[in-house]
Length: 269
Image 1 (cartoon, one colour):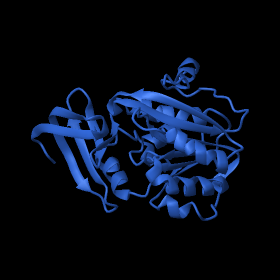
Image 2 (image 1 turned 60 degrees about the vertical axis):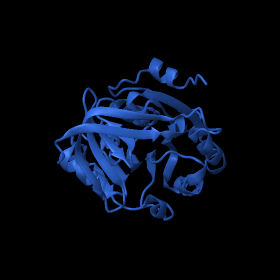
Image 3 (image 1 turned 90 degrees about the vertical axis):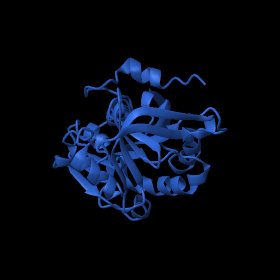
């Protein structure tokens, strides 16, 4: 454990010509997982502990609930749910929000066991007990290989919490969404994290995905939405894919209410 406080430089907005210099930061853990992920757990005064992967912020304990509640609850509240699948979500917070619902089972595919292990052992404030829930089963498989096989069961809800979509990883997203339909139950729904809005790019991540979805899953209605996450210095975007008649009924306590949900669907540029 690193106990010397120093400056932590976050340069994930290099294209904006911006870097964050966090003063009096404390490096709690620095490691490279077996999957090659360079992971840093950084304490920053007033913000608490944040997780960085390859110098890009992934989650911060002060505001991670804004992100994870926004990813999970709109799709979970849009119809009956018994079986749920999560792709990604190594901190355990996505599972935490799913398990607030009275579901039968949750299968989570997170290929980087090293990420899961450090959050299990040292940072349980993200999962808040989700790792010990009997309904959760973890699989440390590469989803881009697993998705091509016929699943043992189909899912009412699939939640995808992976990397930002752009033109460089388009083939991976195309393959995933092509095969995912056989994993989805009739009238099933999907929620996808679709990247941070960036005024400098010609095509936003959610627009890249929308083009694929319109071909691979045309029967589902696509609702883009966004939420400002202070730790990300921008708006996280998501896609809700659901049958056209689906409506949200927020019954699980969270920051989401019907008026807030409506505001998240309004884009100002």
